[in-house]
Length: 205
Image (cartoon, rainbow, N blue to C red; front, top):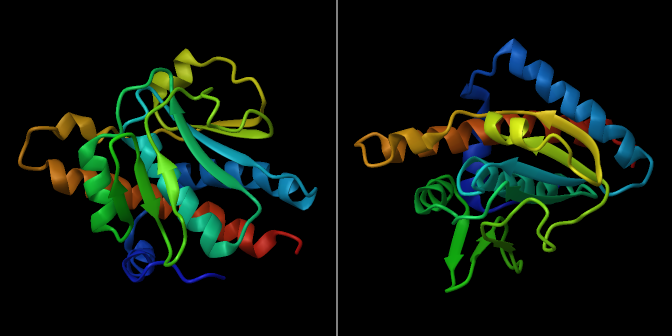
C-alpha cells in the first residue's frame, strides 16, 4: 500500500463518517464484483467515468480513481469523459484541493497529484471516446442519469454500471456552492473507497 499526500490520507480517514445507503452499497458491490474477475485474469480494467459535460462529477470520480489505484497498487487506470466536452469546472478543482489533492494549472490542462514525487495526471474535459482515453477493456461508470440515457452503447466496454450522483451545479452562484462541491467530492470518494478497498482485499496477487 502506498502513502498518498498527507491531506488525502486525512480525508480518506474520514470516510468512515460518511453514510452510504444499502441501495448504493449494492451498486458498489456490483461494480466491484464486475472488476475483480478482470484483475484476477491479468487484464487491466480501464475505468471511464462518464457524465454529460465532463466538468464536475466525472472529473471528481476520475481523481479519486487515480488516488485509490496508486494507494492500493492496482493494475487499473482511471479516466473520464462526457457526451460533450466543456471544461473542468473551477469549483470541482477547488473541492479536490480542499480534500488533499494537489492541483497544478497550465493553459491547456490541469495536472493532478495524489502522491509526492510523481508526475501526476493530466485532467481536462473531453468526450468519453476521446483518443486520450483507453478504448478497450473499459469499465464504463455512468455518473449522471443523462449520460446513462444518452449513451446506450459504449464500444469497448466490458462492464457498464450506472452510479449517478447529484449534480453540485445546482448550487452554482449560491453561498452553499463551495460546501456542496466538497460534499459531492467527499461522497464520491467515500463510495469509490468501498470499491477499491474490496478489490485490494480480494484480488489474487
